[in-house]
Image: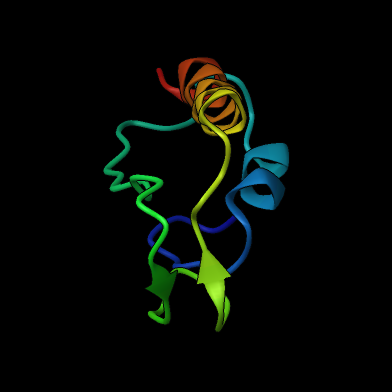
Amino acid sequence: MSKSQIYHENNQKTFEKLSNGGVDGIITSPPYNIGVERNDCYYDTGYKDDLEPNQYTNLRLSEFREFDRILK
C-alpha cells in the first residue's frame, strides 16, 4: 500500500493489506449503532446501523483487534 494515500473501501479489505506493526496511528469514528439511515462518504447508500447489540460489539471488537495488530 502507498503512504499518504486514501483508500475508499471496506476497512476489512484494507486491514488485510496491512502488515503487522505497519501503522503509526489510527483516527476512527465508528458508527454508533443508533438505527439511523446513513448516506455519507463512509457508508453505501441506505446503510442502516441497527445491529443487534452482540453483533455490534463483535464487529467493533474485530476492528479493534486489527488495530492492535497493525499499530506499531
